[in-house]
Length: 401
Figure 1 (cartoon, rainbow, N blue to C red):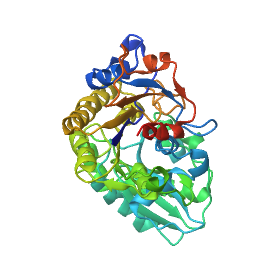
Figure 2: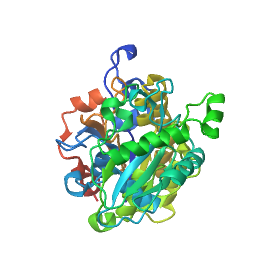
Figure 3: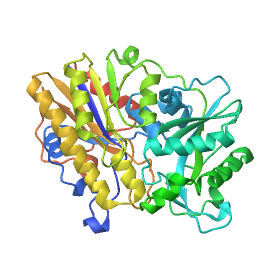
């Protein structure tokens, strides 16, 4: 028996007037998901516990079967696991985005955040800029580590877990009310702008029509995580296929096998086919029982507020991941169960995450159901099924041996 979970990050949304009152998921052309839905159980699941922030960190822990109220210690520490940072007791890990701030204002506090991802900057370009920052700001107390694309890590020795605002929550807004209250962090953010604003690489980016990656932005502080083994918890050998450090870090912390796919970058133009093939190979050739395929693109397009690109990301997920995985597993003759869902909504109207329940689809190749529904938020809600505790869904996937 094989198990596969395919997660479209931030795929759920709210009805949009320009789509005739439909969500991007309902509007998108998704024949693979709709065909599966007609043969499957669909319903809604609360992936974010009451009172917790609806981050991809808490939500993906929940989806993987780990209660965030028990296991969550902050976002950046999970990412630090994948980067290979050896956190000591007392260390605080902080996400360091390289963002685009407006340039016309003289004072840093008066600037606006234009893009939390600096046009989905490449890891290579970001590493060059982070190196410039390290030369002036790194010391025994603060250590910087390169992550992926715009997502990087700061380790604060004997630091404090301070409240910090995610940059994707305030795109287009003035930053004055959202700056770090901790003076050390604020001073570093300001200094990073001085270092990066006129860096030759940013001057070149502007010439090429790209957003300058001109400031660090700190958020997601937390302490050393303590996760338990996925295999010991579920008695299944698991593999993770993701482009982002958060998911890879969760895999490291839970002793899952991390699969790196060439060309997988967490953006709209990621290597969808490569991810699908990696999952199929892990399940059918490498002896793994479970594969978790994480696709970041719908979330990124939600943060950008692009209806067109979010629909495209969902359609790519359907045609280039779900379809080939299903076809390969069907052809193998191996019995399998497939779970498809988002981790949280990233509605176009707010450009950030919400804690609302999300639709799930659970398919069993041995026991195909017959329904006339399709896979989207409205129809999943009308099914009448609601999983109140998201971390219990993984056990539900595995319960039918």
